[in-house]
Length: 94
Image 1: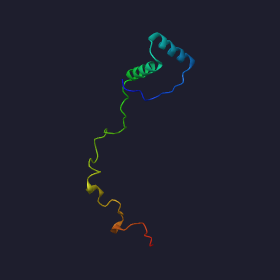
Image 2: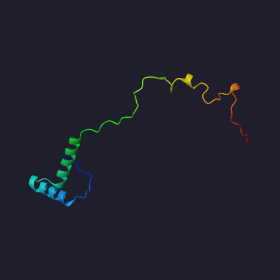
Image 3: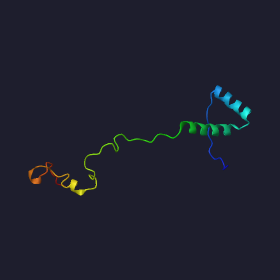
Image 4: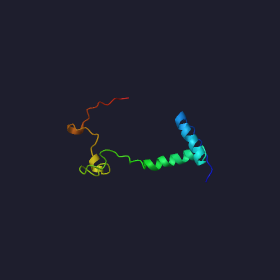
């Protein structure tokens, strides 16, 4: 087994401490061995975490599929829709 480099500190209530002490006596394992085995046991019992799901992602099959990459959709974007292409904003001379 490779060198153990991580140290964990935990607080135990009296009942959990009694259970841990009993396991050490009955099994002949160290406290560290019991805690490592317990962590692996919990990991096995809980299984893998469900994948993160983004609601709405991939659920809709309509609309423009190349909106972000096709430049024709961006033609005139940001320009005024007023007749003559005039902008409503006033220019400020500096």
